[in-house]
Image 1 (cartoon, rainbow over the protein chains, first blue to last red):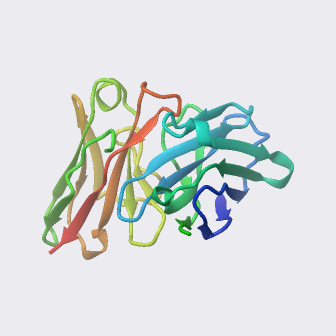
Image 2 (image 1 turned 90 degrees about the vertical axis):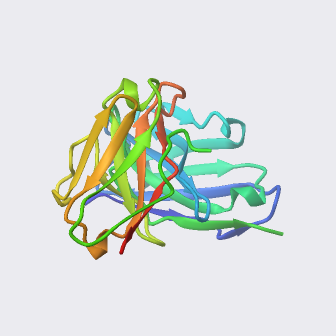
Amino acid sequence: QITLKESGPSLVKPTQTLTLTCTFSEFSLSTGGVGVGWIRQPPGTALEWLALIYSDDDKRYSPSLRSRLTITKDTSKNQVVLTMTNMDPVDTATYYCAHRRAGKYYVDYWGQGILVTVSS
Amino acid sequence: QSALTQPASVSGSPGQSITIPCTGTSSDVGGYNYVSWYQQYPGKAPKLIIYDVSDRPSGVSNRFSGSKSGNTASLTISGLQAEDEADYYCGSYTSSNTLYVVFGGGTKLTVL
């Protein structure tokens, strides 16, 4: 059974950089046709795709957040890392790690989510 | 503002059927058969219940069904049960960005 789990800080200050790690099991990003990404959900509102990285290191970003996001993978550790710069209180949200297959446009496995609050 | 439009809330009584619409454009819902639906309980991660418009993952009840007509996709839940009370989100392929997926704003289902 594929599992994903997010880790990182629960609280960051405005202007700081957020670094989140997704650690996954039962699949490998060295195998073709697999992608891992990040989706966030502000309290009480909708889901928003942030970034996605495929096994061939192809990276995709939300157009509106592209300048602030970097996604990388560490295949040996089964991890994907997302950094988001210049955090603002409007970035307060639950951040989910997501598994998506190449050529498929749905998330079939989700992490449990991590709530990140941006406040001074 | 989400790319796909869903009603904020729907309600129904146990045993009834309800339908949740998800409206997009020809660049997403109307142009491709890649609509998905997710069920989310409070404080939990979303769960995939429909993909590719009308396919169900293994283990998802056949009370959940999906369809599409033009630029509007629909999720139908038949034989409504108390446990179906949750938020429901649609998602679709979109040609408008390179992530290729957009979500709806979500619909709160209340079982009366």
